Length: 137
Image 1 (spheres, rainbow, N blue to C red):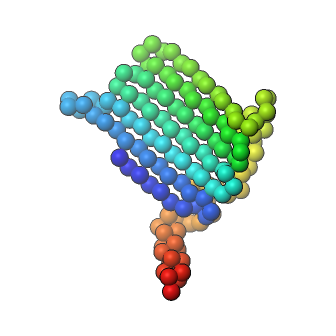
Image 2: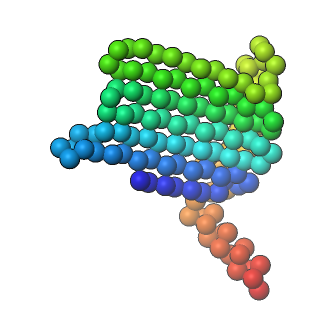
């Protein structure tokens, strides 16, 4: 399993991934999750999971304050069946596109998870360590 977390100038980003293999080396399942979070309830979570039986699930959830939108797609590679669920919370019907635009603006303003707003993660970690040392003195 791999995990990477970094602070993004008032927000944070996290990546996790894992894979499982059978005794003969065949991949049984894999999953990955990426989360980007900022202040004021701005967050995006993307997740993908595949298993050895041909099932694939892709999830994207976006939150902006008290509103959120969750789109989940499942796909069976063996049968070709595909299903999509699109659920909104706190968003009036027909306003999903407006929510997506507002979400994109909020993410762009903070550059959450895109490397902006705070330099490299190593520099941010050094800055955080320096701030903690100063607070302890």
